[in-house]
Structure formats: structure tokens, C-alpha cells
Length: 260
Ligand code: PEP
Image: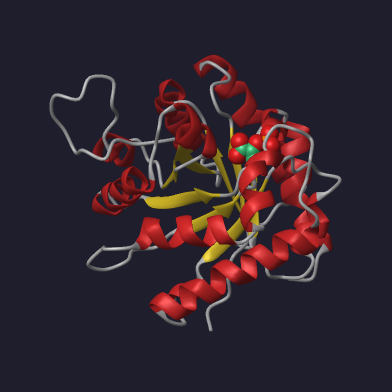
């Protein structure tokens, strides 16, 4: 069985222009290297706005930082008359390795359905990007369907109908925990992760079930340890706290104290 490398992802959302991005990436990388962070043991990836990506790429390459670069979305199309859309082909050229797909803010404010998410996953694979597929239940769905049903359904919908599956990461993010300060308990995150993994195993077999599954929703340096302690959850997707270099580095460095 392959070991799943923990993945710490920072979703900046619509924050920080390209100059601020340069400052944050520098501070984050220096903080982590001062702490002898081993990027081969714990992968760290930032997801800045599109307009920051070129500056981030140039900096990361020039300074040989080991930080990975991700994008927050991509078009399901490759090119053409789709004003305002960004192709996965362009992201690949910018050194982007990962792309968030189906974040709850996109499902909620941009009417992204499971079908759109599925098409975007296919687009990511066409351009050698690893999709970080975000799934999670709203408060209403939690009350009516329990915690695992929606994340499992959204996971399987995103992966359905592809001829072959490429690499992917699942980010379980209860919608009621995003940016609210409300956090799922480690036991809840573990239970949903296990349910998602079991559904992957049932539908796609053992190897696919070894894909990484993250927790996201109001994660901070002082609560991350609980989520990773059991070894079920393979990392975290962090929003607000990823805008602060010390705090985000603290989240990544905390892995050092956990026997994985
Ligand atoms: C997110 O945006 O994916 C997220 C988890 O946000 P926050 O950490 O701020 O809750």
C-alpha cells in the first residue's frame, strides 16, 4: 500500500494582489525553511487568485522554493469563445500542479452542479493538473441526511463516467464550517473520511481508495493536530488562516509532532 503524503493546502480565495502574494509566499517559505520543514514529508500548496499566479510562479522558480502552486478554479473548456474563463492549459504553463474544483462557494454562488464539477475534473486531467475536489454538506443537509451522505454522493458524482481516473484529492469541507469558526470534531471528520474512502473502494477498488482525503473548515494551528492524529485524514484545506504566514506555517509544521 502506498503511503499517503500529508497535504496542507491554503485557499486564499479573492484576497491579495500579486504584490501581496509575493510577500506572503516569501514569508511562508522562509518561515518553513527556518523550521527545517521537510516538503517531501508534508506537501504544502497555496491557491492564490489567477492574477497572482505568474508572479508566484516566477518567485517560486527563481528562489527554488519547494512550495506547490494551485489554482482556485478552471474552465471545463480548453479554449475558445468563453469570455472570462481560464483554461487548464494556461494553468499548466504557469507551473500550477493542483486546482480546486467544486468549492462550496462556487457551488453556491456560481451554480456549479455535480455535472459541471465532473466536467472540470476531466479538464484538469486533460492538462495534467491534480483536481482537489471539494465536497460537503450544508447545515440543512446535515439535519436531513446526516453528515456523510452528501460528501459521498458528490465524490462519486465527480468521478463518475470518466474513461479512466487520474490522480485526485478529495477535500471534505462541511459548508457550515467554512469561514464560520464552527469546526467539525476530529471524530466527525474521521467518520466522513472513512465513508468517502469506503465508497471509493466499493466503486473503484483499493488503489483509488488510497487517494488523499483532506478536512477543511475553520482549521487553525491550534486545532489541526486533532484532525490528523488518527491517520485517516490526510491533510487540511485552509481558508482564512492561510492568509497569515506564521499561522499557515504553524499548521504545516504541526505535522512534525504527529506520528504519521
Ligand atoms: C475554505 O475556504 O476552503 C475554508 C476551509 O475556509 P476557512 O478555513 O476560512 O473556513
